[in-house]
Length: 408
Figure 1 (tube, helix red, strand yellow):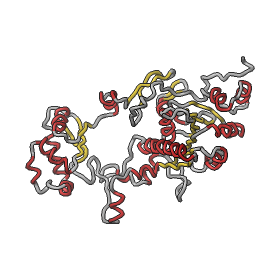
Figure 2 (tube, rainbow, N blue to C red):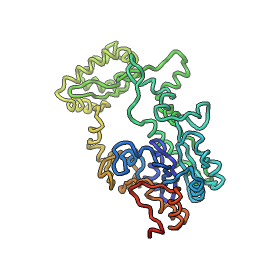
Figure 3 (spheres, rainbow, N blue to C red):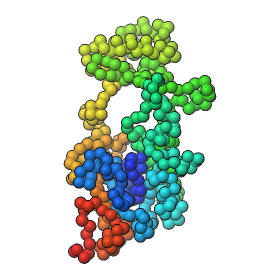
Figure 4 (cartoon, rainbow, N blue to C red):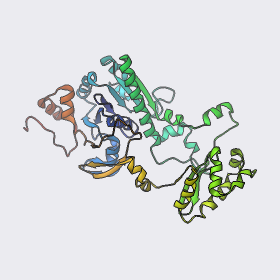
């Protein structure tokens, strides 16, 4: 879908690379700029073998790697010469750093007015906190999200998955697509400011307007494994595991039918969502007693499914990976790396009827595409490229032997 578009990728870790990985999967040519001395720092995370890591492959497959020492003026000069032939630039340095390197939006726009640039950061490029560097959990804490996670009588907890990073990357990829569409209509490029803080704050379900209308009168609180504003909703213990129930008011009669306890619908403790929430613990005990009366978790889920009660088993990551539904939809997929071998990574979060998705997923070693990128984008010859290696401007994984005219 994005074939013919070229992206310069100055990203690292997860949020920025998620954005560029998505546009790469959509067909864009993504040239990942990796800085001396060792490229993206995630190359040392996950399972590592022969200069390749599972962490790097998951977030950077489908991209080309151009290794440069950006402290050298010649390296920056090469990149600036590419800008007329580039459609999109994505970076996630701390605010201000990309400008110090000479690649700020105004500088790039002066070279290519059609350029689309996206900056991804923890809290944004503007505002009193814009000076702060940070990661997923920093944006989460500032957004009032961390305070809502955990048990009510314990300190706030944090999630062990990169919800903010990945969601910000997806939002940034969406914005890049919108900006390219706008450019096709108007001929003008644009600058995109994407932040983890903004993405996390955007995730609040209902708290923001209620707090705004009732300041100090309504305070969302940590509710552990149960939902704070609706009942019954949360994690319930069953025979052989746990089940998540999400029973909204209109679905309450379905649960009563599944339980064969329609009389609870007239019980003054449970006859409205508001009173069910006040008597959540008593309701939880009734539901868990019913769930544990089944011989297995599967039997309880079957009874719930028969009445179309929204429910799911609480699966481990390994169990989720092996779920037939997930495998059939390509939500988990295999990748074959010449160094690491065959392993699985997450699939794309959306499916397209006219875009079957890429099957040839692979990730480059550091600097593996140096020669090809410089020849295709700038028309450099072998002698010029050999000189760039000799001057330490180009960097490359030790497993790769840079070619030189002298050697040939």
